[in-house]
Length: 400
Ligand SMILES: Cc1ncc(COP(=O)(O)O)c(C=O)c1O
Image (tube, rainbow, N blue to C red; front, side):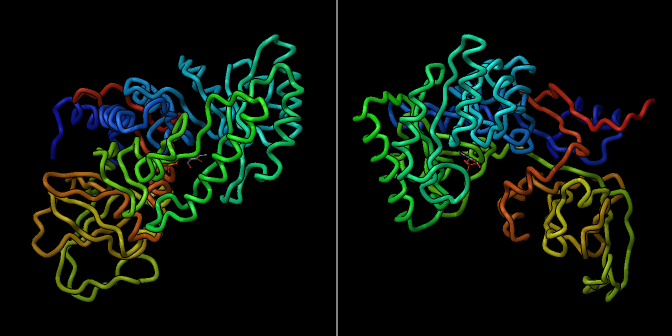
């Protein structure tokens, strides 16, 4: 276990028996290396939505800005406002849907926004003109995600509509590439060419469009010709490649270690059933460790019988179904494991490593879900330069 004294003391003092260590240096370093990889003139927007993919909105944002990110990306206006309240003034784009009633606060906070409806454009114009401000907007185009945005054939008309609003600065077009992590990039290339063609058409019609963007982590690493004026990178900042098909030219360091402790240990004979539904039976006499982690924390139930953890630098298996607040591990015969031992659920211990990508694959999901499922009940320990620089704990209203 690489654990400095100070950190151990803090863990003891706070009675933490389940916590996520967030290595801010890793996030900063990933940001710097990704930025270096970008095509000339391309800026880096760091996607910090959804609490920095579970790593902490403000902490992750400060780390990516230290690493050289030019922009921050959130999904909703309230997250951008949280950034401002947290003292972060970096350019920020609300990439998701904004409601007209949010326009005033978004403009006051100096946020830029994705737009794709007449209502939001009118509301932004109203708010910005009342405050005598300009608001930067990006036309969100749906070139194949089937989610938010207007269709390519609607872009010219919508851009014309926006040009009536003097307080809106149309800074660019944006689109999302849902299969840029596939082995076959034909579909993504097609999306890219439709998108680039739209930019060209609008520029020819007189729009300046200084900042057009489409590339997520996968496209940023797989397709340098998709970088355009800016890329929007999320998962890569937190240290993971989106899929095995994503190129490994940029070294990424996983930023989160999820750790817990053994709270109970028992020796069980062969063929003993474990947990609800008795879906697991011991294959031999073995030690079974209980950890105080369950689906209520976001250790999702689909890790039942397939999850892997590290104890004393050894890989062990989740035995039976994940319960609401406990999980069992088959740690093997004569394990030497003791109550209080540290267990690593995601990350490294000694030479061994359990990646969020590996774990997600075995649970039939993606690392994004594993990280963002970890909720506020999981304390976060922020590490920088080997020191704990912050702790965020769940607020239970508990007093000493
Ligand atoms: C609009 C948009 N752009 C970029 C990203 C970043 O994606 P990734 O984390 O795969 O880099 C996301 C994430 O979901 C997104 O919604």
